[in-house]
Figure 1 (cartoon, rainbow, N blue to C red):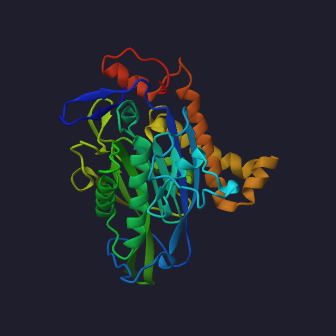
Figure 2: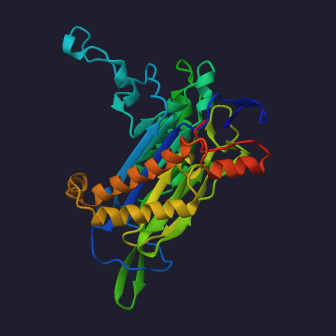
Figure 3: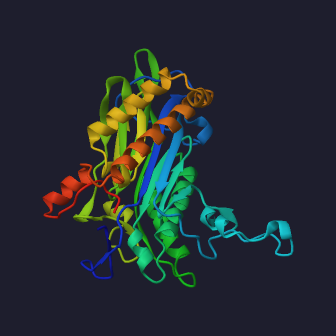
Length: 363
């Protein structure tokens, strides 16, 4: 069962059920200009860069599944009613999961104890370690969402000189402050994200612009870059562990910090590549070749299907395709996770550790 790190590095706390959340965040990129080609090494970013000046953007789709509903966010992280005397504006606990911090809604979405984020330039998944739900003052869902909120803000504010690990470090430090006294909420989370960027290169035909991904990872969630037209995987981030079933994680009492443990990979991509940001709810239930096949099949089925539902999605263009790909991947992972007799990467790794485990990872 997944473990969290206590005050002592080797103190272990176990949870009563393991990963019950599946997060699939999918993106493909498109050029907002037409002067890019595959380039080489020279980097030359605009020092006055804003989102509007990045020559590439994502089309994104999100699919989420959680065994249990998200826990409501506690005060002061929920949105209070504007006027308690207004009967049409009565406080509703269902709004707690929206997240509210210092007068603004938190960026991203909550899925169980996890948080996801997707916009035109940045996608990310934070997998909150659910063991904190068994401890007084523990709230992994709050921690994963706060880190996501602050990370997205830091990314937005530093596009001219992007440093996603530094941005994550700042987000981590802000989350510590936000959950300190008098609020005093504890938790840890894994993190992974991909930032769309570019580099300018000089060639005989003139200046060319190449799309790049800045990929950050800490823990066992992953970024995968697929190339459906070639039915292959271009890149996959490396999972990080302390020991079996105890991934690296940032938060309360953890020795891991972004500046020390997070990895950064810079990956060149091509148009129509599909980028996946997934929790271990996907990678513990589907092998790499199954993920690639699922993505390729989804793209082909979406293009070829004439169903009413698919026709409605097609009206949304590439965004509709990305939502379809994300949903199909989530459903495939869920099917294995809920099958007690299925073979899975989680089962395979558990057997290597000498544990008698059968089926998908949805304990």
